[in-house]
Length: 248
Image (tube, rainbow, N blue to C red; front, side):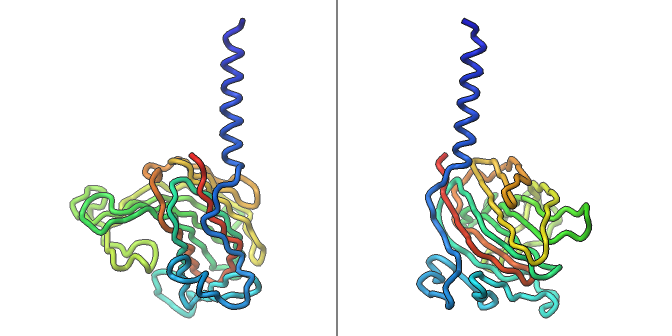
């Protein structure tokens, strides 16, 4: 018997299995469609969501009312922060950009113990904004490490950072350079777009409106995640957030 045939069959089964895993539903950890008329404190409490006053419920979505024109020089937009624990995750959400300057960052954070050492925490994020021209890069996936060690050679000459969101302000640290990849996407002002991000091991894959846009192998993202932050830098609507834990 030709020994090549069983090998090809095995490879085909492995490929099919991997594709099935990517397409299969995981265990839902966080889910909200924001259809209620008022914020339910039982849902939007510190134990599950942390929603600042600069977000509000609007038309079955969560609206960011942060306006950089009215807050010049502000370092960060507003942030919501669902908490969970999982190693491999899928994060899906829908976003509508209502202003040309609107930008949304979705950050996946690993634990960060407050002690000297490298690294103290690691983040990976998906950034998206409206295009400025036909060839503009509008989405990116990035990862960054942070450290308290001022002698870390990776951060030579870099100033201390507050990190990616207001919740990290007590944890002053240095941002170490990481990996970033970028791609164009057909994002339109006033139109809903579906984002799906999978992080399995060190592999990150992003789909927008059902189309695979970016895939990237990260260095340090194969670790237990503990929070996700949605940070809005200008008026936008956000809804149908689902965070799932995937089987390895």
